[in-house]
Amino acid sequence: MNESETVVQIRQLEDTDIGGVTALDEKIGGEYRPEVWERRIGYYLRRDPEALVVAEVDGKVAGFMLGEVRSGEFGLEEPTGWIEVMGVDPAMRGQAIGRRLADRMLSHFQKQGASSVRTLVDETMTEIASFFDSLGFEPAPLRSFVKNL
Amino acid sequence: MNVTKTYIPKKYHQAVVKWQETYLPDFGFLLDNWDKYFPRDTKFELCAFRELGMCSEIECGDQKGRPKFEQAAEMEQQQGGHLLGALKAQASTEFGSIQQHQLTLARAQEEEEQFWILRMMAEELRHGYQMLHLLLEDDWKSVTDQSGPEMVEEILSMQTGSHILGAFNIDFDSFIDNVVFCALIDRVGKYQLSMQRISAYKPMAESMPQMLREEAFHLAAGVVPLRRWMEKAAQDSVYITTEDIQKAINKWLPRGLEMFGDERGGGTNVRYGLKPMKNAEAQEQYYEEVGKVVRDLNMRFIRARLPELSLSDAETLLEKLLEEGGQSQGISWEELVHMPHREFFRRRGVPAFRMVGWAGERFDDVEAYLQHLTAHLPDGYRAGRDFKDYAQMIRRVDSGELTGDDAARTMPSLRRVGGVCPCSRAVRWVAEEPDGNGSGSRGEAVR
Image (cartoon, rainbow over all chains, first blue to last red; front, top):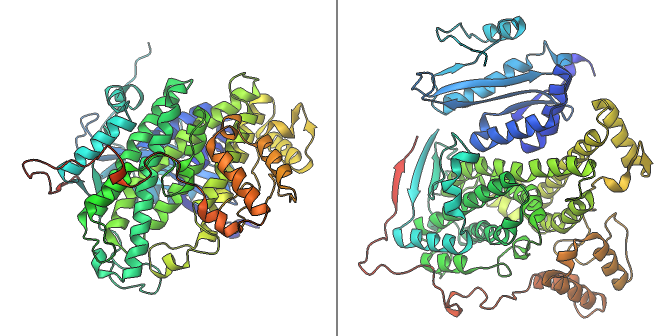
């Protein structure tokens, strides 16, 4: 099958995707971290499962996006969608998988009453920053601060 | 998203609280410790949610495209009867699972796993409450002679042994059952709720979204501990072995398959617009999905046992073990978990009492079949009443005394003292309010 024939299914993430997300994370980061994803997906599934999205190709997870709507944090009282974790199979990049994941998640955030969506991106990750630029995200006046302990 | 929150009339609400105090005594402990395990999560509340703004036209069947029914009285009598049957069965499962989980909840080895199950039990209570809300909000006179209060009393009076579906009449033997039940039986629940999301009866459809959101976590409350147990088993933990997990799968999967109903049926529900899939189609998807869970568990085991293997090497090893059996790189086929054949240990549906073995092999001799079952089922279960009833029934089928269909209709028998008739029990859950208050429901919009 060539690239143009690849069928990408965007759907809600389920408990059965824990292994697939773990595998994709390993493919991207080189580290096998099942306990991290068991805990993290368990957390998100009990909060707002409809906000969790995966891209499936040939029965395998080719991308995922986790996030939720929150309010009352960082002085942001209005309901705000947060994209918190995402990953796309490096071999599948350039096929708009990230965009399709984001479209679905943002649509859900809107239904949840969010009027804006935010995320934080490491300045060194220019590819991720470009991705959010392409989705229409703009730098926000909210700055992140950190102090090592 | 527009969701309303409603409380059922006070006397029924109090009946559910009384029921909770009896069958879910750790409820207060859960709420007191909520922030420890579920920080930032909205605190649990016993109420009914309805999602507004859903599809208002019937989505499948003979009446597709017509407006959905707001009241049971608008439906054809048989259609309403089917709906009421599904509604009562759903209610029965919600309350029934709490009674089962409570039996072995205290035996959890890990506090976190115990709290996950406890939260799941509280949410099942809310799901049961949701179904009572549907029974009490409408007038079901056109469908049944039973009044709303009588239906509530009937449902709250059911116990393990007198519930509508077989899976809810089986006692738990250990905390493994709590976890495997979530992974397998709640998964059937997910299918049923997803199908009922398109129900031609609008109040039913509107009840499903919030239940489905909560159900997603219930499945994780099963799958995540199972994954962790597979990791520990791979590291030769003495506590829970893959054999224990396999036997629990063997115990519950046949009951899960049967919860979809007879493989030949389900067409009426589709025609009436109550569900979009026939029984066999939904059951097939479920079986495949459980197969995915099982494969995932095996990958967790292999990666834990052989951490030096890459993902693709681990996948290759799993394929080799599944195809060839035997042993490879220190892991044997027997150490993994596997899907029982879909006709194994069935007592309802097309394969009921057919004597099909775990791997699909056929048995001619009933005693040999029972020996086969005893080798594949958990010890605690084999020593219980449910298995004894099954053994007696299959012997009667084998001798020609009963047909498989007759036997299927008989299982499970009602063995609890008191049965389901509310009049036969000393406890009545719904108490009349002396001042006549408490008959109206209270509601509010939440978002």
